[in-house]
Length: 338
Image 1 (tube, rainbow, N blue to C red):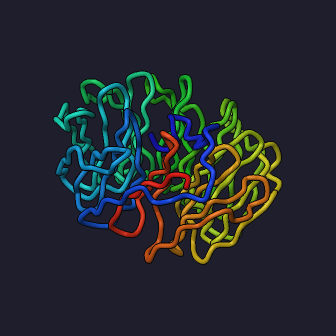
Image 2 (cartoon, rainbow, N blue to C red):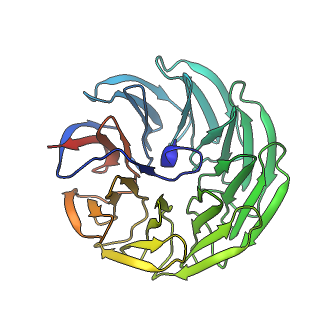
């Protein structure tokens, strides 16, 4: 799922050293801003053309497609033999991974731009009506729902018995995964579209108030708050004592997880709205300037870059020694070491 798992750490010890070469590229019918998910030699991703694509991970061949009810802008989630995603019509669609056959379908309150997260047979997702949903993974029935003040576009994060979600009402909500009861709420000074990341006992999240927050998972107490140079709609990627996040000021920042101290920053040519994935000691992240960057985790130096015409909004997924991403406006592409 988005960020590699329900805690969204976006880190793998698997090394993927640049430079990379393009293995394949598949054109869709509209821009691709969703992030891919990968399982069992298949890449799953939706497009604004309203089509969900299942692609062979090594060759890029289309295994199957499924026409949903509206534009697809967020990452799906996979568990067992099922993949689930939401769309702009407010539909949640559960499909069989191998065949694309519909398993179930559910209508939510409004459009879904939130990536799905799954844990312990429950799917967690937000919608534009500001509702956080817990859906039974197998049946599609709603177990509970929680209303916030405005839309939820960030992906909920889950760990143990808690779910954390940001809302456009500026609140970061933590609720019980079993019944949705509010555990704590943190109010920031700007809308939250950055997806929270849980690392051990800390929640990391960005806000439109220009700040990255480190919050104690149990109590909701702020451990540190660091103001950067713009809105933060990128989601933090965490590798040990380092956190990497993109910013609307055009920079990629690396912060110390314990203190928030800035370790380095790298300037791109435009806003960085996509999120990073960290593979070993390399950071891969796209920018609105149309570049996919490979940065050294130690110092932020550019190790490799791939240039396209249009901005990169998709967050990479790394599996099978390959990087997968929605890129070049209408394409899903795969890159591997040269």
